[in-house]
Length: 246
Image (cartoon, rainbow, N blue to C red; front, top):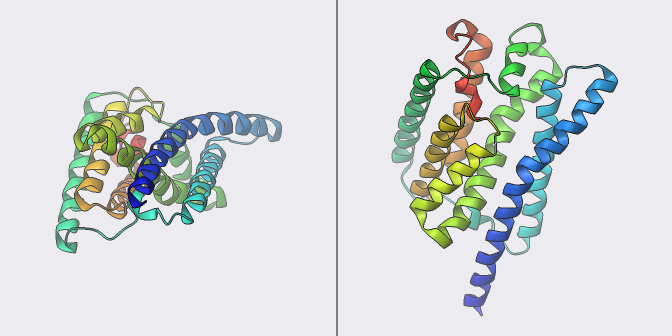
């Protein structure tokens, strides 16, 4: 009986992973279109509103899946469990990977010209007069809190875990990172998004917990956002890749 239940759980995990990964970009497109219509009618800036709305929709989607999983007590299957290595090792690992990730981002943008994503454009606006507005605060929460949590649940917790059961840990890491990069719809920054996915996924595999990956993702977004908002002089017009792996 336990064996059969385990098989059902694995099958459900794969189905949920596929549905979430498909829903992620589809919802972004649908919400972007709806927001564009609303923004045109109300004659307002849609950059911040679009990101906030899409993140809220993705949050609702993921939480809905969690509600369905609660009865099966399956939270641990997507990484919501204690870290399997010591706190010291986790801190060193996350700190080292974060430094390498930021360094790679800066080096990449030094040689590759990128146009920037809507998040970057919105943050540049926030660096001006609108920094203290409610929409800007919500935008920062989406970038630094909600987006890292939701994306780690979808791409590491569900997708990478499901793939590991079918193709092994190494291929699962590579494939899930590629899907993570592709889901952002930005060819210019796909390489750096792919590397970011590899680092988040590697942390997830090493610690056997989704919490360090969420922390790394959120810290990366927070540092990148903080520099762009409070020290924009550190950025050349081309230096936008830091924020493009959101």
